[in-house]
Image (cartoon, rainbow, N blue to C red; front, side, top):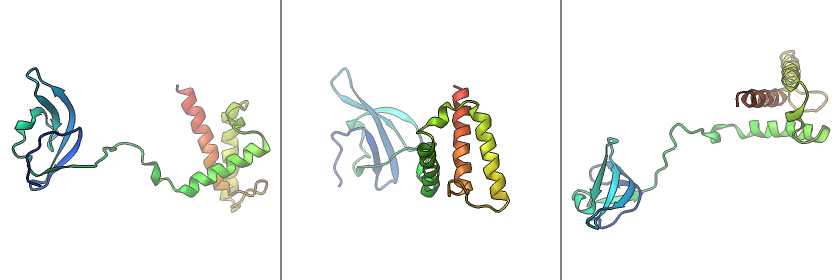
Length: 156
């Protein structure tokens, strides 16, 4: 690789021999017509440099990284959990109508009661709801989703 960088684009770069990572955040044109880059180094220090400043960037290559620290990792949710909630919602959409749970009168109290009924049935050894044929745990998860929806809506 051993060639001096003449032009770079925004992105993440790694310096092979020194094991350093640099992030090119932005580029700007200087008054003298020189292209400058805003760079964050591996110590999170930010500076502005021209290509001439990259004497030790001879063995640098662009790498693909994605900074998603602190973001929800929804792929960690068990897919069958989501499918189970979907199964209960589909049952309810056929029995009543789609999304009717959002406009139900006294919804929070009624879904708390439904959550407790399914919880008590489950704790008493009944695994499957006799009316729907769906697991009480799936009904419980769906009722918790309903209650969370109303709580968030209330806090808006």
